Image (cartoon, rainbow, N blue to C red; front, side, top):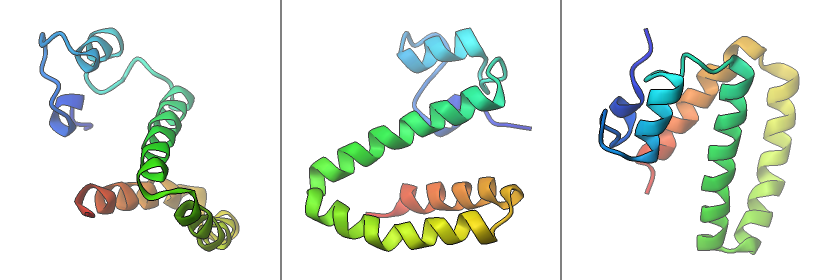
Amino acid sequence: MSKPIGYFTSAMPGDGSYLDELQQRYGSTFEQLSKIEKLLLLHGVVQNLLSAEINLQGSSVAAAAVSTVSLIAQSINKRVTLGEHLGLASALINQLKYQR
């Protein structure tokens, strides 16, 4: 069973935050959203995080990272089953949460 949004964020039911609004509209585990909608939402959140990190570290660091990651991403696409992609995403998210 999925944990509610508030388990992962500071959102609390009734706190008036935007995350609370999302919980009220789509459910505390986003159960009202389809898989495609959740993936699109995740994509948007990751894009926001990436933009913020590029602004912080600079475009030259980002360009070097793109050259490193491009081959990895292509290999993942070819050699890792789709069933493993969510687990890989979870592992990366967990690592990013604790990386300084």
